[in-house]
Image (cartoon, rainbow, N blue to C red):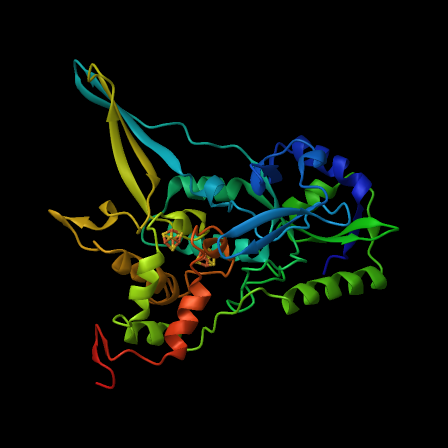
Length: 381
Ligand code: SF4
Ligand code: SF4
């Protein structure tokens, strides 16, 4: 096992320089529009230094920390999905020529990107998307290219957010796999350091030329305690016990009507979710009709068009669309892909404008007992 190392806060500029020298564009947390988001960052000064967040159902606020931590926030507003499974992707251009239609495919995006600040639940969400977009029936070429080009610099989550429930989903908060480098940030009056775990040769290459000390026992214990503390302060819980069967038995539960009265079918929950991968296709043409483009863009099961089949929409009500989303995430996903579709990041709760909470909805169905009927027949049949 590689020894754990110590990167001093003052060496973070050198760390950035090394990433640049190895040809990586750094994508990391930064402040934009009153939230922590993921975007290109050129220097450590652009990180959310000394900021944290408060998150609850429908609530997100930035707050000052009492220290200068670089990664002292919980789940960012964006997920890494926007760099791996792009919100819009041009599939091809078609030109009218005298010899007939000519199809041109765009050049692949081969940029190397270092994802800085990836959390455990986010690694789990990438693994879920890998199953579908790399190891599924069809490979998504653009996703494969972006995923292979991404260097994962993970960061231990030391502050669970008010809407986090990764512990319930067995996806965090401790990062245990799936990284090239892993940082645990320790801040204090006397020091500000990062304990570094090296996960791959690619990660080790980034550290070459940076003089790093070996972590001592006290640092390792301190880092372990901080991770344990985050695990002990999860904002929410989702009981996964028998959840697939529970939801399959309760397609007609009255709770769906209650949640549908509040749901605006705005699509926010699907857009912020790091595992949702539904798309639609749009064709656009220029005015003279000489050129057409086909684009893929994110779609959502909350739109009417998403379930439009040969002359009609099959999920016309908000009730059927919310039920589709939640039962897919927590139940049918397991049958399709062998895992839950939820990693417990809490984004769908925070960014729902009316604060609808997937943990609360699940608990309400569980605690009120099973409804009398389901798509499989009456209860007990
Ligand atoms: S369903 Fe909600 S909590 Fe689960 S992964 Fe998606 S956004 Fe995160
Ligand atoms: S559950 Fe919330 S975020 Fe999702 S569609 Fe309904 S109102 Fe929008």
